[in-house]
Image 1 (tube, rainbow, N blue to C red):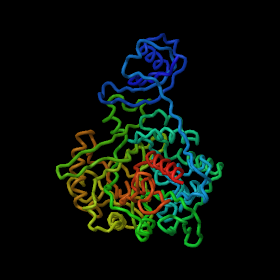
Image 2: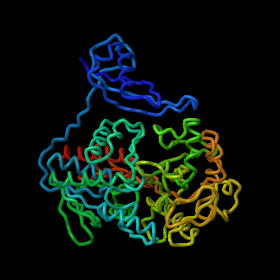
Image 3: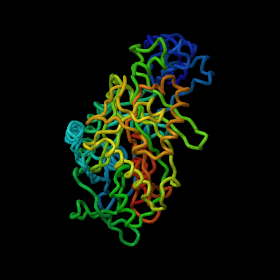
Image 4: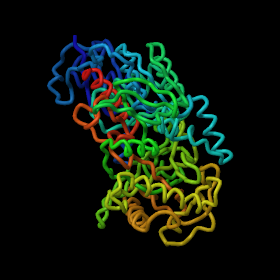
Length: 524
């Protein structure tokens, strides 16, 4: 007997586990009853032919060797087991700055390896943070330290809990298993595009927090690192909240892409950084039922499929790329500001993804040549200028400027909204994207919408709605580090995750946090 992995099993939408077992036996060329166990490893939707929408599955099963093992899509299953890093004892407890995915998993590894990390998070624990965010959405009163960007779980906590990633790093499997152990739905282990959902993610975040604490880790909320202490080219401590000094020789810096004051601190400390490309644009909303019909045809609404998603990209004649990002089926556009009088949007959806609208970021890639300055933080200042202009265009109170796609394509200011009702709170103001976005961005968006409509019918629906701006898709700076994940000039400092410019999403940030924790242990 052996455990085999069998890929590319076609399964009807009404298919069952028995159908998978039968197909696996046929592929292995063994009797169905000879399969003693079967586990679904991956399931994706194949909608390339709208008259034949089905699932493509990969399974692992225990069975005797059959003649079918010559099939190139069948191989021996190789179980993955994460091995904790091993190093010498640390004289001082390591400090993890930030408790988003990168900091969370860095702290988890350090705790499991016995190093009792201290974690600082400028924002609030998830329970308190959720109340602050809800209050902001309802009233327009912003807490600048506990919001969609800052607080336990990081910015991804108020998105969708998307866990799909392009990384092939095997540590990603460990991340998914830890989320499930902490309370996330088990389906994320086999969904091709796994997501936890904004409503379920807090439970998983709490579970990981309590595991770190049970292993001797300490998590300090409402605690900001206001200075780093460096002696003879090495970290020797940090100043917390402007007064407390913490001695440490290991700092994992997982600050997220919106910690602008910390970026400024690093620049003033002459920590090597560089400008990094990122993207700008707006959120685009469509009726979910139209997206379903466009993607699934007559199968739209089938209970086995749920809400359809999309991921689109085009390369324009002007050399720029336009693409969709962080697509939220059945979701809502959310206020994601972290600074007074500056407006930012993002998207989120619940586990059920049962809202009326679909939304996604519609982004244009930009490079440092667009920043207008060689200053390391020029990208940050560009973001700020756009966010300030958007705040004014919305009329204050964090109301967002919004424009019908039909008006946008015709270069008309919207004076009314159409069939797609805005989901953004505290509310929207009919406006024009040109009020806050540079012309090279809006012109690229127009070309992009027309081309993307050829890939997804209805993407350019005149009644679709643009709400902006989306400025925080990724970090505008990269904190330089070597192959060992350590700063190129400061020993013991490990720039980490999305804010440092080395990840793009929950899983890749978590994987980078694990990698940095491993290096910190091995370099003792």
